[in-house]
Length: 446
Ligand code: PHE
Ligand code: NA
View 1 (tube, protein in one colour):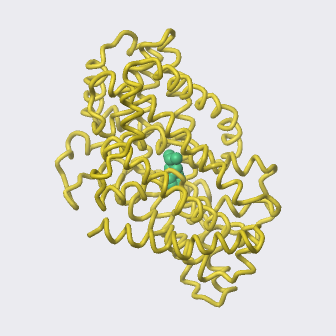
View 2 (view 1 turned 180 degrees about the vertical axis):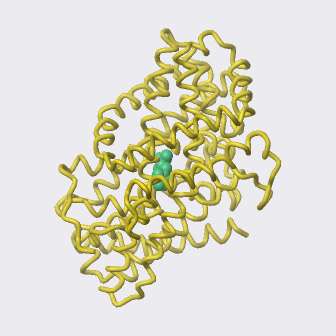
View 3 (view 1 turned 30 degrees about the horizontal axis):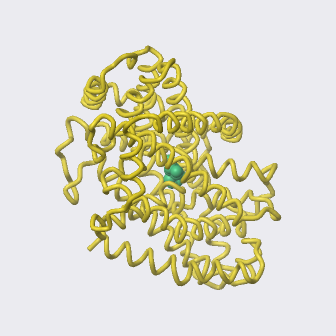
């Protein structure tokens, strides 16, 4: 296949599309509960360090490969490898990425379904005047009801696959871009409100005063995995976007803008959520339910609480919708590349993700104690191994390809930087990102 001639219409369009992929459950749901489970500030510090040292340079590498290849990830990798005189087998990295996002989407869709449930509940005013204990009990009852959870999972996946099948994601992206600032504003408002509560001080201390003794190799691996996950790096999903990036746009600037925004959203969500945790004497390590229990409690204290809360879940749903469209795209594109019609490809992918997602649904009730691997149940497996092992592994291979396999001229041209900037980037990838990822992966696995 030849180079695509399609380009994002404006510079902003590219940044907004990548932001749409990046900002999602990772920032608002996963970041707080993972930070809570891993002891707070030390984890946060590690995660920010990994975003800077690994996430950013590897994100640039990934987008750069897309812009250099101007094809689908598999085809770009194969084409560039041939040009560099390297093995065409590099293209299988694209398939590995598609497999990774397949696993991620299977639980992402289920948790996005929780947002549908909570959106409906908050529109119905279910949280008005609810005591914190009631909110928690309501969530537990919901988790214990696989039928309701499967219904929402089904609904969310249909929403996602319809857009993917129609190939209208650009339209949705525009809507997303219009509404995302509202989500940031709502989080800002909530963090501002949190500053007036008694939980704010302890939350800040817990988030920003590191206790180094809490750091184990496993905590470091969790932090690295989360940095890849939240930036959407390591699955060749951003590579696909890079293919449409205009020639003269600064790639490093775009990557920095996305990373800053992504971390900012996570920090705002963290401040709001942990203020409630400490004000209510809850356990920060409470797990995946953390955001779903704390935010209804927080919004319930505000005037017009039900309205704010409904708006919040609506916007969150939109953010997860655009992320999941990006998660589904690589698989559908791969099947399409094998000659399948787009609609069929979307149906097949949707059905497969739906089936695997049912394991996550059931792992909160019937299959809670079914632990096939490493003592983890289905949800724990699929929400841990792909983000924390597959994404770093994919990122590692992307980094090796970009900094060791691709010839300097091709890489520098697609990165769009001067000789000095290129040397800096390549040193960072070669001597920091690649060894660091390897060391953390190996240490964490042992
Ligand atoms: N970055 C997304 C989030 O934080 C998740 C994601 C991971 C999207 C990998 C695409 C690829 O919600
Ligand atoms: Na994110």
